[in-house]
Amino acid sequence: MSSPDATKDRLIEAAGREFAEKGYDSARIRTICERAGANLAAVNYHFGDKQGLYRTVLTEAYRRRSTTVTPDLGDLPPAEKLRRFIRFFVEQVVVGEDDGEWRLPLILRELFDPTPALDDVIDGWIRPRFELLGSILREIRPGVDERRLAALCFSVVGQCIVHRITMKVSGRLLGPGNPGCLDADYLSDHVADFTLAALGLGPPAGMGGPARE
Amino acid sequence: MSSPDATKDRLIEAAGREFAEKGYDSARIRTICERAGANLAAVNYHFGDKQGLYRTVLTEAYRRRSTTVTPDLGDLPPAEKLRRFIRFFVEQVVVGEDDGEWRLPLILRELFDPTPALDDVIDGWIRPRFELLGSILREIRPGVDERRLAALCFSVVGQCIVHRITMKVSGRLLGPGNPGCLDADYLSDHVADFTLAALGLGPPAGMGGPARE
DNA sequence: ATTTCATTAAAACACCCGTTTGAAACGATC
DNA sequence: GATCGTTTCAAACGGGTGTTTTAATGAAAT
Image (cartoon, rainbow over all chains, first blue to last red; front, side, top):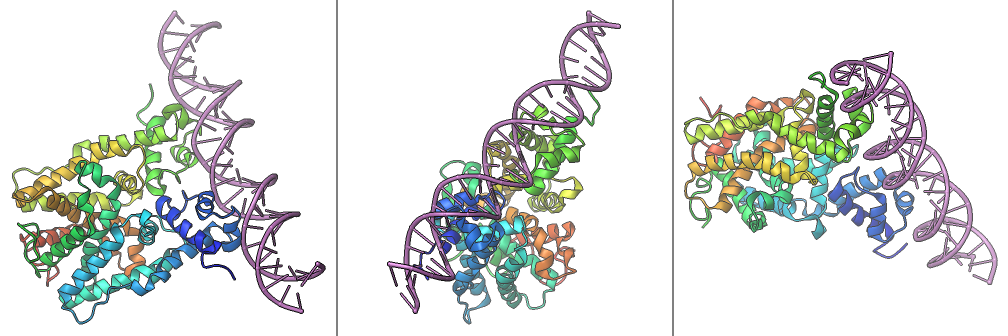
């Protein structure tokens, strides 16, 4: 066929970035082709139309990273499993699009403005992680009912993704020179400490020094 | 002048809904005028252009509701203040756009895709509430540093807004017939219980029955 | 009644975007 | 080297969108 950086691959990469930054409607095929160094007609040739490109980008997004879909949680104690899950999730959330990490931002956009490709995203990306988190929390709270379990999962997920959503404004909101708040290490530790404290598996959050020795 | 439901007011109301549903780029002036029962040229006559309409909508959004910008927190104990803040916030988050409550969804969109009107939103809407939440948390944790205080605020806010973001997919994610998870009462109680537990002001979250007697 | 002004109405304009077209360039196979 | 299928290219098309224009409407002031 062709070289590993074929037009098709470069288009997917460029489209991933563009879609993640602007959203489906606001993304421009001309911009994508420009970024990919491809001709305008390349998108329609390789993917049929804009929607076809988007679907491909979305499925490729979680197909390529499927090896790292979950952190390797062996037989660790549940609290440590939860801590590692949170760290893994925060790391994927906090990075910017410019780092080539457009996959999770793209999925967040799909939640906010669903497209016909939503079902694929839910089944292929969201549900596996949501159920992994649910299984960890069920280890911690064996007898909890489904509704409460879902609420607990959302409490964890919400604490993580809020930093993606407020990322662009947190600097202006907290005053200049406070970007350190978005440090992945600090955030994942905080969310884990907060959550474990809420579950009674750690000291109350925000006391004095670091909650972890 | 004109009647209280002048074209200008109806345009603001219709535009608020449209912008909240579709976002700035995807919102259509033609649709807005149609919803408002106004002529196409009305937008440009009254607001100059689309951006002018958007800015007006955004500032009107939090100007009209300024009376209810904060729940009335008297001299309640800090934990109860926090609980009421959360309830107030969740109620604004969870309602749908169709209920005429397009204000908060619109502001969430502004966070996700900032426009030139972002600064107004931060100063006029976000910062007051963020600092109110911060002052409540500072009562609970007097000695906490700014960075940790911000992280705590985000933990609270994140738990609330995640339900707006996942609103459209939670039904499909959790299986059919589970819309009850998005009930405002249940959610605000859960977030409050979870947060107070994390702060050491309540029993661990998700144990047996309701944490509140 | 006439003028004046603010508002509304219908139509058109200019631009942008996704898509299509038809031909050119390329590489492999015989 | 000729042929064929694949890929790239420049240009154009049709539809939709924000915006402008020009005239009509209607109510108050003269």
